[in-house]
Image 1 (cartoon, helix red, strand yellow):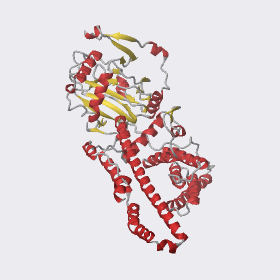
Image 2 (cartoon, rainbow, N blue to C red):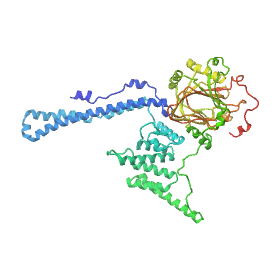
Image 3 (cartoon, one colour):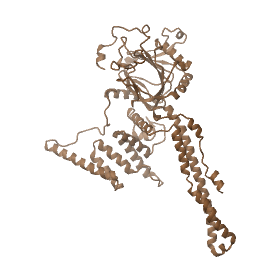
Image 4 (cartoon, rainbow, N blue to C red):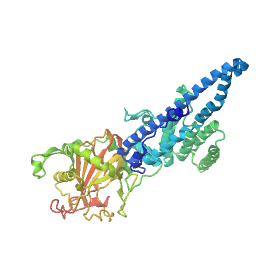
Length: 565
């Protein structure tokens, strides 16, 4: 009996840990590239199998104990009908003694055996040796979702229903899912989004309580939601609502320590507010509150990153709300070009003009599926969190306004990478001998890169100094995937939006003919709403272009342009 239970009844199903140990240890930031998120599904599959094995073992344990109950109860009922007769039978006396010694010893062992610890150890091993999201990843994913919410004007309730721009992509979010979104916003002192998501958590909790047919306890107590809501509305300046919510909380949980302290604090603050209004009335003010448009987002936009107007323009372009002037569009052409290349005379490129000044074009069918797949496979093991250059030190650093992972591929890594460089020369008429390596980028959840310049500005004295090849004269951006929604490359000062299309490449010059940066090329990568966005960049530098794109002593741009940036 004991052997059967230990080998099959309570058998633990383990994954081969040797394979797991050999896997590369990785840090957080899984949210910064969707290629990493794909591996999380494999991790989840292993954990599901582990949980299923745990439940199966528990069921086997319970089934064994139920069988013992039935057997012992049957014998006990028979003995109870005539105890003296039952005990007088030596066989019965032996069986009773045996049940209360050997049999109950086995039962006790089975009851005391802790299955959970072994399976928890299994989960711990996975957490240590497989890609597993961290708290930073959870926060990053939540911030990404609120970024999409803002950029694309998405309704909170619609997102909770699994809808993005009216298209249903996923199952509904639970009250606990919404609560966690609000909690992550709260941890970031983002009380605007805390309110949105805590209100949705409350709505879903109330709806579940009204429609649920079972008595399962809620994962999120109503009191917890009310506490976050109260403090968030207080931070938005609504003291009276904060006090009302706290009073409601105390009716649910009268001994809630923080709520008792908060109530006293809110009452004190409300008294101060009333007193200030009374003072205003004595001075001739009617004491009426100032008009506002409701809760405002907490925090100030960093003016060094983008202006408020630019932000609005950027988001409108991301949503596709800006329609360009018809007369301007009529000037743009599509044509086949050879760019004075002997090879292109027999295989001309398909060029589409996106802007005449500055000159921005899109080449179609210039990178192929086989090349794309090879580039992706080569890039994945080298992926690191994408960085930006500190304009003071010249050093590379991570930034919240650029969410993606990138890798760099050399021409010597594979003939395909070298061929891409040759193709860039055909497309641009410039040399890649001084160009940077091919940068491959995969955007994560809500992946984006806010408005920026590719070239180094005068104050960025250390930029590209180590390369010794001058400034970035031109950009070639290959699109290596289609994107279902979002992910456009936009130029806010030009009202130009380039939408990702697999196999195309965008090209523009970053510098004027006199070597001064063209500030109108300031551009951004819109957040990816749905889909996975893969791109690769080839940045060309000034050195080596002297005879291919000669400088001009006379500026080809208004001098005033330099004074307005």
